[in-house]
Image 1 (cartoon, rainbow, N blue to C red):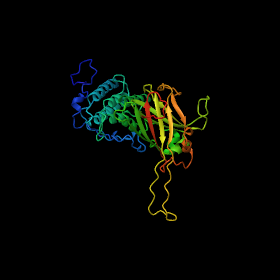
Image 2: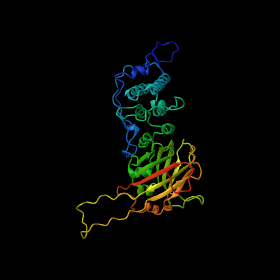
Image 3: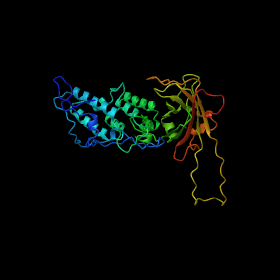
Image 4: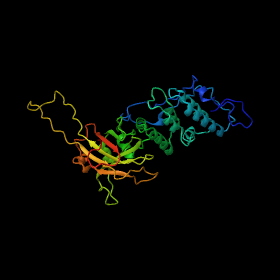
Amino acid sequence: MILDKEPLPDDPTPSDAPPSYDTIASSPGASGSRSFDPISKTPSSATSPGPTSLASSPSSSKPKTPWFRFLTSRTAKDVRLTVLGLVRDLVQEHDPNSPAAIGILQSCAEVSSTHGVSLSAVLQEKSIEEHTPLYWAIVKRPPDASGGIPDLLSSLLLFSTPLKPSTISDIRLACLVTSDQPLFHRLRQLREFNAVSPADEMLLGAGVPPDEVEVIEEPGEEVTFAVRLGIGRFQKRMMVARKIEIEFIARGVMWKLEFFIAPPPSNSTQPKAGSWCVALSLSENSPPAWIDSRLLVPEPPSPPSSPSSPSGNGKKKQKQKPRPTISLRLKSSNALSPPSPGDRDRDRVVVCLEDSLMGSSLQYAGSKYIAEDEKLYAALEGKLGKAQDSDCVIC
């Protein structure tokens, strides 16, 4: 805690350093004036809202924060150390219902800029118990944190941009530690967290692909989960980008579900070139896990017909028999391991769409399994543990 005190001859603390967090958190001017988009609480199945960037929030005029001034004679090192201490206090003592964080960090940004210190770099240092302040803001964040007011995580994200890969990895780890799938899903809607391929960006625009992901974990069931998916422009993305990746957290494990067109094989165990495939694997920092799962793709419901539409000879149109649900089983023959940094040979379960009776139809134009909005609606049902001999995945 940084305390107000009389400066000593060799004391590195600026004589007019900011007061302790307990004092400034209640300051009426602590709300600042920098605008931003808070990470509001929305359903995890929400569609991505178009291009979103941490750096898109403009900075307005200087806030009136007379309680935060440094002597011009102080060095950049003094400023950096003071800001580090203040940020630590902010993370440790912050009330999630207080909007003070945005004003405090705004003042830190102005003072740091004056002394040639990068606040973004300071906030991305692993300065608190070998982790960044962003990590601790997620770990300490209440699961039901309301997005009605600026929260600490949103404020830290705003002033940390551009994010380094190591910072993104630390944030992803925090989401995994807390098993916070709703927050993880919202973060992946930000461009900094979800690297869009050049082909996807050209096809879909600058925004994140509008994929819907909803994880369902029934109470009392410790090893099963289900994921509802809505994959936008499925066929076009597969034909152009040749790969679609979806990540989610379920049962304390971070998973990656990947649709891809197989490249030329390097050995006989790999799919033949051009095959449309689906793979399930673990993401970094996940614990090893056995998995028995199945991907289900039902025929989407037909849109309601207009009452004024012609009915031919006046007879009611006979209702067509629904097509069978595409079912692809993804089961591991051993415990999957997470990838190591820089490891391209990911440990994963791979099946070809043609392994299912109607699976290959997903690659053909006019497929009845693709909805009119060009989305592929599917569900992944999974069970942790070794695969059983029966066809039942979730029993």
